[in-house]
Structure formats: structure tokens, C-alpha cells
Amino acid sequence: MSAKEQASDLVVPRSVAVIMDGNGRWARTADFERIRGHEKGVDAVRDTVTECAKLGVEALTLYAFSEENWERPKREVSLLMGLLKKFLQSELGTLMDNGVRLVHAGRRARLPSDVLTLLDDTIAKTAGNRGMRLCLAISYGARQELADAVRAIARDVKSGALLPEAVDETTIASRLYQPTLPDPDLLIRTAGEMRVSNFLLWQISYAEIHVAQVCWPDFCKDDLHAAFRDYGRRVRKFGKVL
Ligand code: IPE
Ligand code: IPE
Ligand code: MG
Figure 1 (cartoon, rainbow, N blue to C red):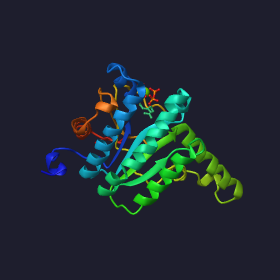
Figure 2: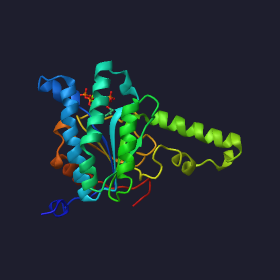
Figure 3: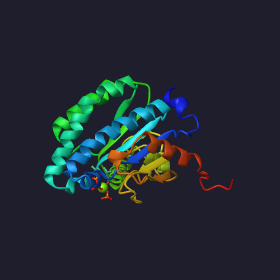
Figure 4: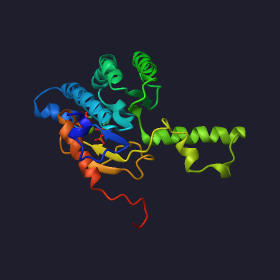
């Protein structure tokens, strides 16, 4: 049975975003070092990407590393960067097999050059794929994204390319890191936390929020399906009266 048939009762959102949280807690519970949680989290990333692609999700945005995460201990940051490189190398085959196109959201300035090279390589190699778009939010912060957008708009106004009165929601949306990605219909956060931690503040205006209790390394296909079922029960009104 195909993934689509197996999940025929699911309402599949067009665009999904995930705050992958709880790697450290997962490791602590198992009496491992925090990094073991991040390592195990890579398996959950692979499974989630594959399943979303198979189910026909159009865009999946994964919060992999926030601007604030740079403040973590140096050793954890460098292990996370190493893991990111390993992921980009080991998962290219999976991305190609599933027709996934990779894109990046975030600031490039602080990312190590070897990570950037691999990231750009993988983006280029998958650019011709026509299936799901996978957006990795790395060195990402929504306030920083909005500040960058405002700076770009200010430059255009200063140069005369844009009139202040012409600035509207579309102007702002078009200056975000990945302006062509559809806004998330569903935002999933794992490890039971009910906050958005500086993720996609503009784009999640009307996203439905699903909080899963499991820590990210334990997040599996059934948890993804549960999130989609939960999403399917929501009544989305977008401010209107139905
Ligand atoms: C999420 O897991 C991964 C990243 C933020 C990189 P955490 O590392 O935040 O795990 P907890 O929240 O400490 O359990
Ligand atoms: C959000 O998780 C960032 C990522 C999942 C990459 P954090 O663990 O960093 O967020 P807080 O500190 O709990 O808000
Ligand atoms: Mg956390």
C-alpha cells in the first residue's frame, strides 16, 4: 500500500513548518550527552521529509538552528554544524529519490564556510527536482528576517525604486528569505512546548498550531499523521464568519 493510500483519511496541509525541539531532553532521559539527541534527531528529519514528500506536502520548513542557538556552548554549536554537514552529505540520495528541492532560510554571515559550500552544493544539485520544497531554517530568526526585509525596503525607498506609500504586505512578504514558499498551514512543535521561539513570525499569521508531546528524536510517522488528523479537524476562518 502506498503512503498516500495508507493515510487516505488524512488532510494533508499544503505547507508545514516544524520546530524540532527536545533533542537535549531526549538525551538526558536516556542518560546520553545532548549531542546524541541531535544525532538521533537526524533520523526523525529523514523520516519526516520522506513521509511529507510522499503525502504530497508542497513545502516543509524545518527549524534546525536559530539565531539565538549561537549562544549555546561552543562545543554544542560546532557539533551541530558538523551534524548539519553530515546530514547534507548523507541525505542527498534521499532528497533526489523523493524529488525534494532544498532551500535555505536564514542569515549566511555566521555559518562556517564549509557548511555554506555544502548547503549551496545541495541546493544546486536538487534545484531541478519538482517535488516538495524543503526549507532548512539555519541561523534563522524571524525578527532578524523582518529587520533584513525592512532594510532592503529602506534601500529601495532611498534609491527611488519604491515609494513609501507603495509599501504594503506584499512588499514585505516579497523581501523575506524564501518569498515564494507558501505560508505554513500547520505549525508543529515537539517536546510539549507552547511557544514559537522567533520562528516565521510573519508567515504563521494564520497557521494552525499542533504541539506534540514527544521529543523530536522520537517523532515518527504516526506522530506526523496525528498532527495532520488534528489539522483536519480545525475550522479555519481567517477572520471571517462561516
Ligand atoms: C532542538 O532540541 C534542537 C535545536 C535547537 C538545535 P534542543 O537542543 O533545544 O533540546 P532541549 O530543548 O534542550 O530538550
Ligand atoms: C527553537 O528551539 C529552535 C530550534 C528548534 C532550532 P529552542 O530550544 O532553541 O527554543 P527555546 O529556547 O526553548 O525557546
Ligand atoms: Mg529546546
